[in-house]
Image 1: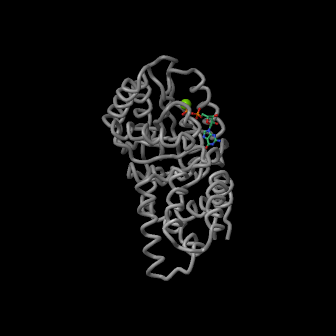
Image 2: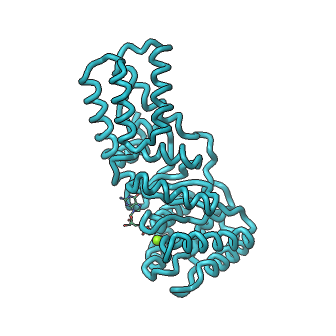
Image 3: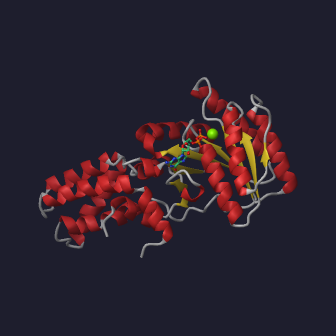
Amino acid sequence: MATPWYRRVSEGLTKSRERLEGQLNVLLRKGPDLDDEFWEDLEDTLVGADIGATAVTEIVDRLRDSAARQALPDAAAVLDHLAGELAREFDSDAADLLAEGPVVVLVVGVNGTGKTTTVGKIATEAARAGRSVLLGSGDTYRAAAVEQLDIWAERAGVPVVRRERGADPAAVTFDTVKQANETRPDLTLIDTAGRLHTSADLMRELQKVQRIAKRESDAPVRSLLVMDATTGQNGLSQAREFHAALDLDGLVLTKLDGTAKGGIAVAVVRELGLPIVRIGVGESADDLKPFVPDEFARALVGRG
Ligand SMILES: Nc1nc2c(ncn2[C@@H]2O[C@H](COP(=O)(O)OP(=O)(O)O)[C@@H](O)[C@H]2O)c(=O)[nH]1
Ligand SMILES: [Mg+2]
């Protein structure tokens, strides 16, 4: 049964699904036999979807195993099990860090990945659920970033802490956390900049922001990476760098509507061992969704 959630995510994953489904159909047309060629083609197809070589090897091994044990008759039967095996790659027991309260969440990531948009969407989601929200405008490098966040905040009806352009992001963080300690919102979200002169400069600045937040906040502080799914393996290596510098707590994977390689979700979770907290499947407030492994896998593979 197609829930509204499933329908929207499934729409968002259209490009990924069409690509993967198309290739799986090519594979099926080659014949029903579960020979070496089938398994190799299946591996190639999954690697091509950006699922990542280690995950693919394990998924295919498990499929081979169940093909033998459950006497799966042919290629079609194996592919019917693919979505289930993909879903197993995700940890479905991870707690939703945005549902904690009170909590302070630093939102980090490379420029243009969708940080400010995601902060706006999360604020909207939380405000609609009747939770109190406070935003911190920590990208002080671009005037447009502050204005952009203000627009989201106004629409969601939530307050924003800001300083003048060029101010120290750690100072904005300090002010935001101080206000959070006084007003005790359920959810405090701090937007940050994604570009500095070098990535080492950026990591140092974000570490400082994180240090100040943790030192000053009465509530727990979490760090959430926003990653653009269209950047594929390159995005994955940036994610590793953020994780090494900041010891992240979770991920938001954005722009899944804009890529044919949504399999990157599997690679990211596998490589970083972090939960996907939300996914972005478009630019509007309604296009931020919780991550539901089974349904995500089905939307990605398209079969069944
Ligand atoms: N298609 C699509 N666009 C998105 C998504 N999330 C963000 N964007 C767009 O990506 C662009 C950069 O977003 P922004 O929030 O400014 O990125 P930031 O530099 O990380 O703060 C904007 O045009 C957003 O509308 C998404 O899930 N899907
Ligand atoms: Mg921004």
